[in-house]
Length: 398
Image: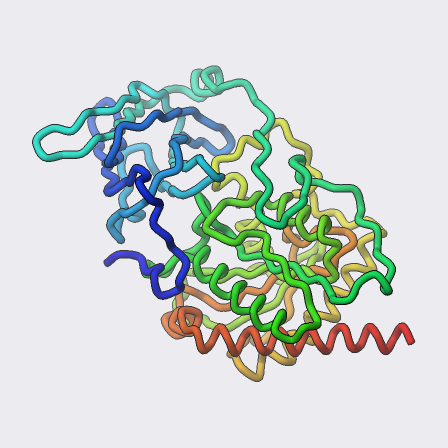
């Protein structure tokens, strides 16, 4: 069963681009072979990353038309893998490796006997010492091209934004962050990826908020593309956002659990589940095959400074307003407002929340999230919460 994306109105064919049609993995006595069937002969690059062990394949931007069960295929030294658009012009495959390996061979096979081109990668076991010795020297990540209407810097971190004079702003600025994207698919139900659910919901919220004429809404991504955590923060600050709303939809082992929850930043998690969720979400850059060895802990360190305390208080006030309105249209967890150290909520001067819209592992939640009607109702509830939040602030300032 192919993973559904068309019903969310998101995917677009890449005209005349090479297309990957299948992925196969074979385990042999001396190696694990990873094969991508592809329509054209393409140039590619393979390299390894450590902590955790990963093998990365970079390709030109290609289309992906793979069988629905392809993500479940794993054998030999490969624990799991993912694929997608890393940035404009560059697609990426990331293999999570169980133990150190060496790249024994990497080559393209031409079409033969009815088969397409095949990108072949052979991985053989090695020692950790040899694995680390073969790593490419850490390099600074190449700056990504700015997304449309996103004037963030290539470094991803901007100086604190100046609060504009209220007379200069006609509309409240809100940044909506569709979680995951591109090479980072997020969770999956087996029928749909989290990255597509979050983008569809973000578009619905943007449409509803802007229809009121009171808000200017920006998205951290407008398509199925990978955006680093620090860039998501930078986008909010560059637009001098007054609210930042990050959208997610988790999947867990217990398929009976369902319901929406809202998270705000805290050094100490409200419960074990919140801590585990934050830890998983904070690994998004590693999942995408980023080399973070030469970077500071500026974003991933969640220690809170004094300048953030007021922002955290505002975030909590908005979260409480949001839970009140969302409970009218959606089932929520019993303790719907939770706290944890989410890196994406670390903007020191932008009130920020993360909404887990439901569980893709629960059939009822998944069906709701795939429903346009439900996303519209959710957008309306969020709109009411936004209205209540800004109305309260205006009354306080009078």
